[in-house]
Amino acid sequence: MGENLNRIFFVFLCIYCELVGANIPHLFSVAGGIYDFSRCKHSTAEFEMEMKFHWQWLKSPNRYLEFRPLIGLMGTLQGSIYGYIGINFDLLFWDHVLIAPGFSAGYYSKGQGKDLGYPIEFRSGLEFGWQFDDWHRLGVHFYHLSNASLGRKNPGEESIVLYYDIPIGDNFPYHR
Image (cartoon, rainbow, N blue to C red; front, side):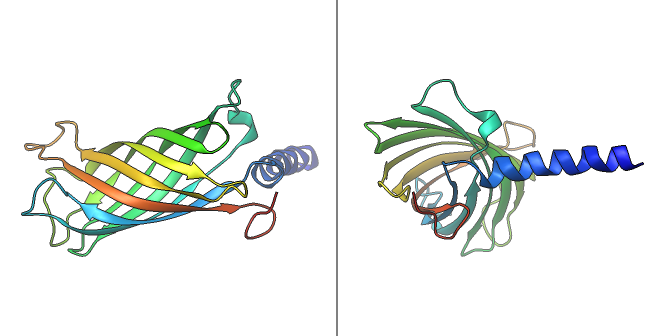
């Protein structure tokens, strides 16, 4: 019994060190923009909150590429909600220019908004941004939401949002 507790403690200690001991911070993201901007019938405002994680064990061999698992929640003024998990592939050029393709999957509830045809939806997108010296980021995120033809219909939607990432580390906000 004591040996099992020691193993469990060791695993949690390793996870904790991975989460807070890295010199690269996690990012808390807030965003706002236009949901379904290409179709006026369903266009509305959208808001997002997202947590983008940095884990040492998921470190890329290339210093310009970083894998960032993420979890988020999107909502529209018409009551549509999308909760999701996924991954971004952060490509950083000249220590400031960010291009980040990403993919997520999650649960969608239409509320009074657009019916996307199925509760399971997939999001693929691309972020363009600027990373400041203190790890804050500002940019634009374009994405497509679709059920990949799992439902009877698959109208999809495209969103464009302005996002701001706040670094989270041992202290808040994070400082280098």
